[in-house]
Length: 284
Image 1 (tube, helix red, strand yellow):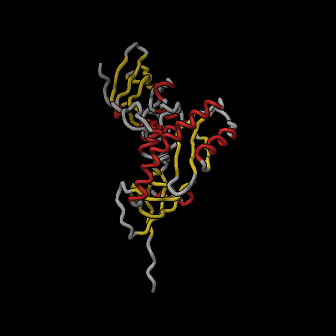
Image 2 (cartoon, one colour):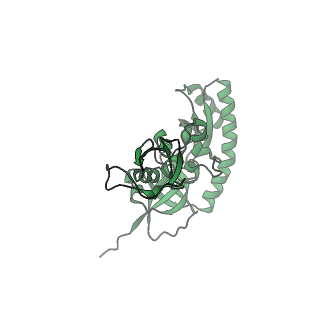
Image 3 (tube, one colour):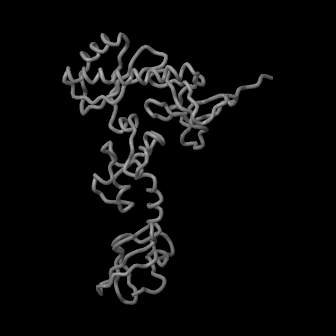
């Protein structure tokens, strides 16, 4: 009976684009976190960083699987580092040509694939761009295939990287690009300022981290009365005017003019949909 090779799923990050993918690798392959490997990508063979085993079933989407080719050799790494220098020069040349052709586009990066004779240029633009003349110029300069790829502003942040308002590297660049979609509802649920300047990232879109604690706030608020809820305590009608999930305090405003803070654990109800009851005494 022949022994079948066991393949396990692992997470990897393509170094140039910071895209995270899943690959299947033989269990006998010796790899540790941080190792450089060669994998297939949608653009061709490229260098990626080995992150480790996939733990969450949600990440095991076979439709997003990439193919592991081999562990990167010293020659692969040297070629990759040499290409980094060439990419900086290529990007500078392309920017000059973009200005010459007066094209309304912003170049983000240039990338040489290690085993293909072509250069990828990534750019952002508000609309479609006719770059045919630009490509002809670039081909005459570099003497190889040229591909221009339009990406979104979120993709630009992922590729370029940077430091966010929290002082940490962008999540899309340092953690994963498979982040949950974000909505303004998430900011409202967490009682955050709806000032777009305060809840938007450098890409101009809502902060990805708004989704991190959304489920927690949503679940905790379900256990407490909503803003505006009214209840009678010792013949005085009080209204809930503030709910602070982090401190566990609720502010009540009475029709007698009083405003008091009470602990959230003093509110109880028999079941979902039932009226809230206040248990305990109000502090003056």
